[in-house]
Length: 379
Ligand SMILES: Cc1ncc(COP(=O)(O)O)c(C=O)c1O
Image (tube, rainbow, N blue to C red; front, side, top):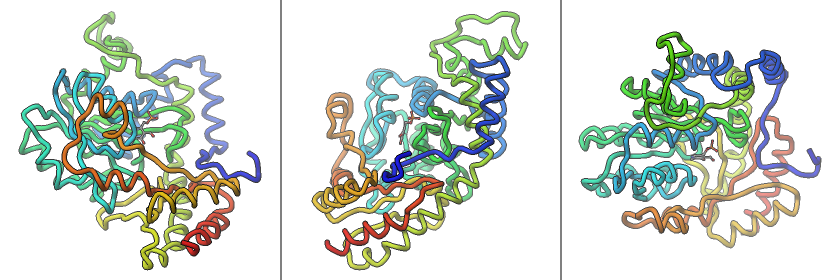
């Protein structure tokens, strides 16, 4: 790493990751569903507490599996926030269904649960929540609406590994949950994800969809004497080498979360005073939510202030960043989706959000604090 530059994120890799990856390489089993994949499944089922966990090669793949499992058809609608990554919507669009974009809350930046019901039509099949920055959506209200309206609930918990809502891990609360182990996430496999299946009805079919539409998993367990084409499907398995890397990360997940939290808390404390002066606002974590310190962001006063802060940090080699271009205003969103109601909070947040570098072994967080403090003082 160039010492003068601070990247936006960087995974924490220890001797354990190296040990497991070498073991996987020497095992002779490099494809999916080897012993490390099985250990990751068992770890997730035991520790995150889900009925069935299936590793995938990305969270995108897990989201696509959720859409396939729910038998979404052409013209069906799925309610979701516009303030999210493109994969949340693409999974729905790939099935010919329509993402319906609903406003976010101004505090947690999660879908505004009070706006969901008005967006439901007779075509609505599911609600896709996104737990932004690893802080939970208001799941009790969302589950109650879904139950009353007979809708499925998908959780895009790409950012939510190790976070909780009222004591339950994110991804285990709706019918199906998707985690990401992409290099930029807290727990990484380079590329990777997992589908968490919380409703037993989906387990058998999920195994088939993930294995190219075959019952190969049953065959490998000795439950059938040959395998064949059973259903639609694709190849969603990661290599066992990546599962080996992931197992080490899962075993270190509390340690990694604690180290991220130290930096998150330092940032949060450092910028407290500026919030009082209404120069910025900091992340809001409701009392009933435990978060995983995935993202520390500041909401600047306006686009100009955000641009200035990014420039100052970039000049010092600090890779701060922003996201998302709201899906409803992007070319894909206009073509494939539909906005419901006013999305002015989504638009405003997207222009004002400033995300600071945050990773477990990050040096110089004090320097970042000092630089951002100077920028805020001059606002
Ligand atoms: C909210 C959200 N959903 C989905 C994804 C896609 O994850 P992956 O890269 O593992 O496919 C991301 C990744 O940034 C994300 O932030």
